Length: 96
Image 1 (tube, helix red, strand yellow):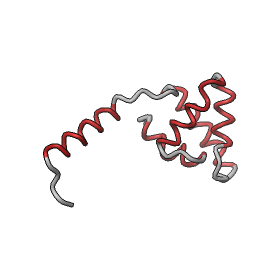
Image 2 (spheres, one colour):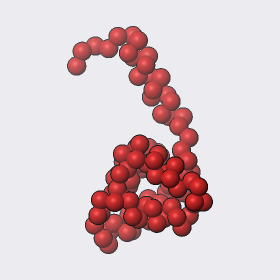
Image 3 (cartoon, helix red, strand yellow):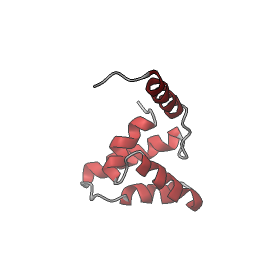
Image 4 (cartoon, helix red, strand yellow):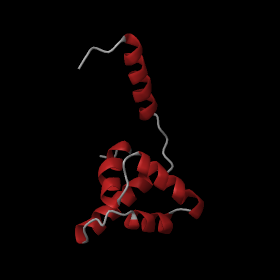
C-alpha cells in the first residue's frame, strides 16, 4: 500500500472523527434490545435473507414514522438482512 499524502491522511482522520460522533436514530439502549431479540430469533430460525425480524421488532417498539429511516440507516451500515443487522450494525453502535 503506498504512503498516503498529508491531505489524504487529514481526510481519513476527519471521516473517522465524524463516525465516532455519529448520532444514530435508534438509541444505543434500543439497539441493544433489538440485537438481543435478533440473537434469540436467529438461534431458533436461520436467517432467510430478509429484514423480517428487524422490521417486526421496529414495528413493535418504534413510532411508525421512524421505521423507514432506521431501516435505511441500518442498510447504510451493511444490515440488509437480519443476520447482517446483527453482525454489521452491532459494532457501529459500539455495544460491548
